Image (cartoon, rainbow, N blue to C red; front, side):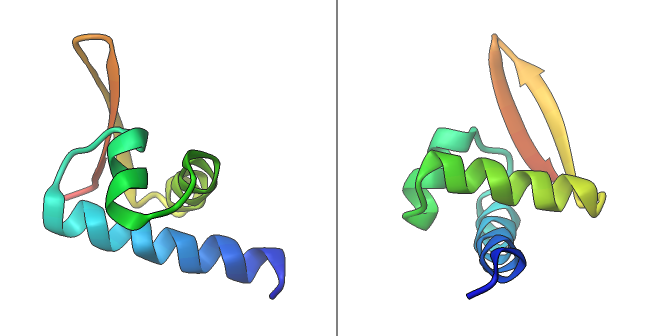
Length: 68
């Protein structure tokens, strides 16, 4: 599989989890998707580049959610 396909597939998994679960940390997304945290971060970068996520900081935690 080409790198862009891997990132795209992982981004889809992350997007689906954020859609159903709401705001999560990268570690939480990793547990929900079964992806390694490094793969989650790559997928979040992909989604960020597409303008599909928001990044928030709450109580020293970085949280990710889908843009509304």
